[in-house]
Length: 195
Image (cartoon, rainbow, N blue to C red; front, side, top):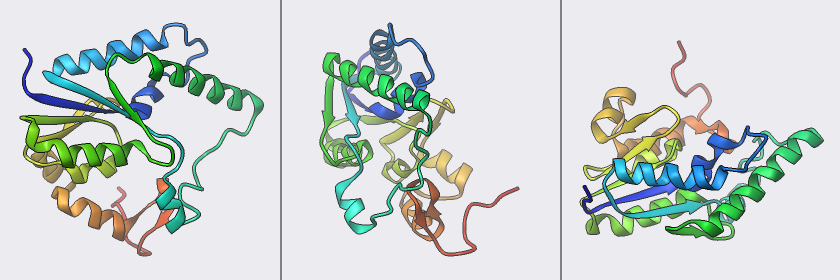
């Protein structure tokens, strides 16, 4: 059943499900099939896939160590694995039968935030597919997130129940606690509670 829903996918995030493969013969077919399956599950009238194209220019200008702590390939085998993966992903992007966006120096989450903010009034509901918790600040009554890795849907209610935060508090929490994945330090001694 098609509804007036928009599905926006974090294209790189989705693709990382396949990064450990040694053979990418069916990657494009599997990737497109996964997108179509998600579109069916969320009754999407329109599908948009957003991709990273390098680090965010404006973030690097603000903080030259942005994402500097991310693990990089250290052996020729690891380097080859990543080269093969991104070659296959870039070829797949060219074959996608749905809208996709990729801009140099712009990350997928920025594209997703822009589209969500500017298109929300045109759709009954927007479903974002990503495991990127930065996107939780976009959640509203008619914007939800599905994490393909945890298989969990994130809504206003579930965010409040699980994290004790409203979407508007997500950004503040990130500012205070920092983000080790992006190499951004927060206030010393403040962070997620460990048990």
